Image (cartoon, rainbow, N blue to C red; front, top):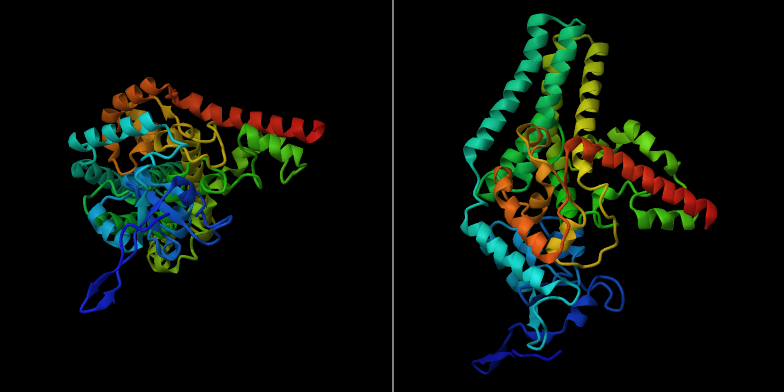
Length: 443
């Protein structure tokens, strides 16, 4: 590596100016925080090389998110996640230590050059078409229908009493309200409801903490990592249930069996998935309390819930009501959130291009008014992962363009019926459990 900028002099004294250097992809790839260049972490954005070694712990999106890209080109991930790029660039500037040498290609060797080029053209077209602009009426009406359902759940008990039928109906209505609130907080967490980031953050905190009773900050830290490296072992927190609860993916299941590891009876995991699904989303509701900044806001949900429903139900009925609706909500959430990912490839980080990374780990579910509403438009998981800040009401518009891109480059664009997607979760768990058992017994 060679310098291409030096110090400049003023009044006979050297004025400190960052020495910019040329680097190769090989040099960048060594700065992952591990290996020969221990503790050094570099990333590349638009050919510029940034040293994040002292910054990654202060990264607003979390240290684990940005460090998972250390030693790699993060241009497309950077563009996908950051709405206000002018503001972000102010923080980036002091971190720049150089650029890629002129003889270095703009695209990393591990990535599909033509696919990267075509996707960036698609991204530019999406921006020109206004598909990243939110329809505030859509989200306002969605919030209104959540609040109406939330209110209706209490009014059913208030007007019709607490006998079995109104108790069950109220439970179902509140469950629907809670799940739909989960989809709305997902929109807000992805900065897709307002143009200004601060308004997304404020309403996200209200919906997540006050309406749901969970931590907005916790969700942001974990979910961004999932989007960054979906289904990537040790980098995607959504598959942290491997290997302690489930064994996931063909390769990892065989590896686990060969090593004679058995934390659970994995050959029966497709059966106990039905009773352990609530444990999968347990973090979503309870394990985030350590984020004390959200705790006060979260308490407003529990105070409101136990005060309003406690005035109508006895303590045993109140606790039963709470735990049943949480169980129903968790089941709904887990089946929808896992149908797009568990049946797909689970892998170690291959440092592929943005499109390939997302396509190998996601699939879609057929569009219908019911599917859109039931899944919070997560039936368009492919489009959502490629454009995480895109408002969900525009997924169907970009889908044909994404299909064309996939067809051109020979990438599989999976789309299946909703019930098939649910069944594939079970089939995938059964298959990986059998692979583990065979390797465990015979290798």
